[in-house]
Amino acid sequence: MSKKNIGLLLLLGVLGAIYIFNFTSLFQKTEMAITSRLRPETSGRRGKGAVVGNSISFFLNRKYQLTSLKVVEESDFKTNKYPHAIWHLISESNSVPTKSIIYGAPVQGMKPKVEKIRPEALQANVSYVLMVEAGDIKGQTTFQVH
Image (cartoon, rainbow, N blue to C red):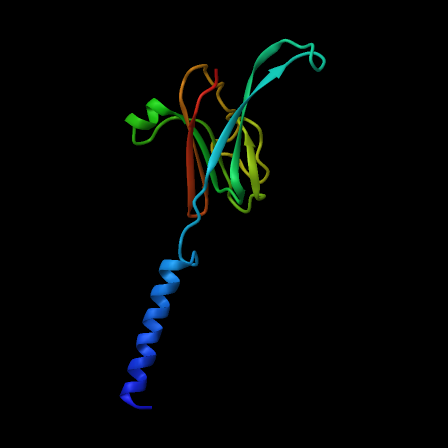
């Protein structure tokens, strides 16, 4: 092969790599989107029960194999390097891929970071931050209960 052909192949390889890197999602991290929904909890029969509290559900944009899940108060998150977690779950091996989470409910394949610690009750009109990790992919959202 001549130097001209080698140079041409090298140029094509570089241009191909630039194209793949810039115009495909092959080397880009997936962005995790999280939405939340507040649901009133009632007691008694359907439609006749009194509202006794709220539960909050979180929905991810696709199924993720979670490695860490943490909820902290937003004010603590903004002012402290290591905010106090009011709910913190980790996965030491493989968690089951999930697309939804209910605050305080177990997530299959995950356990509390500190054994026998239960999630703290959420306070009304306090802002919280949910931070979720699935390997290298991270996402977070701010939420409140009323």
